[in-house]
Image (cartoon, rainbow, N blue to C red; front, side):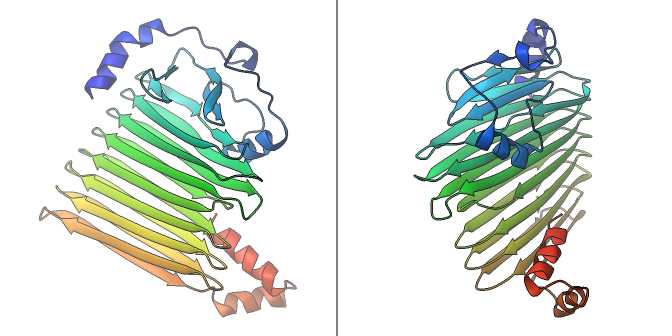
Length: 336
């Protein structure tokens, strides 16, 4: 955590007054929030206008809007594409929005973001990427590194979504690296809500004493889409805990693969739970695994793949729904 200490000492003293109005934000280039841009943002962040507080909005490989506050500073990297998000110690109830949208064809975006969360902070971070293209393949590849201080609570929400012509590729490959100091909680909710042609999602974490990591994943694939998820978690500290919960639905000719690994290096608790629903000609492969290196490591995993229960469909059809409506209702409830 040397980098975090350096930011605490050198950067926070230089923070500007809080800017909560869009008119005071740093406007990097001409940008208007309407049409497809607004639709993408509402899908991946559930916001319908520029948010208050700290935010960084990236479009087609470039930052177009950025805002820092007295509590949270967003600094562009000098040596490569990306930003540093520095959160002061003892910050409670604040949020940071860092969405990415791609609205053109032929875009290949690569970004590296680092989050430095000061001790005793409790914050919400909302990320995600939405792609729209009707012409050429577009993709976004992003690496997020989280440096979590002591006694922190961080909730991280990341949604991925694609729209436009079905036969045009929309590719998303997120990488998330997490390091948690003692007595911290990190909740990661990641969702692929449709329209993504191909994705490889990689998450790795190191958890130290008395810290807890909760990962909740939801994935929907249709047509010939492909999605792979990889989790690799090291429970390094005593009484560290991790829970990985995955829910997925594969339809048509799509393919999903789930690979997860928990390594118990100390007295710890770890559980992997992955459930999948398969329809049509889709395929799902699930490979959860655990490895104990300590006699007091308590680790378990469970995987289930199956179709929608016929009795559920029949019950809904007796209430007036047709088969397609019944399937849709069950899937939407399952992915909630």
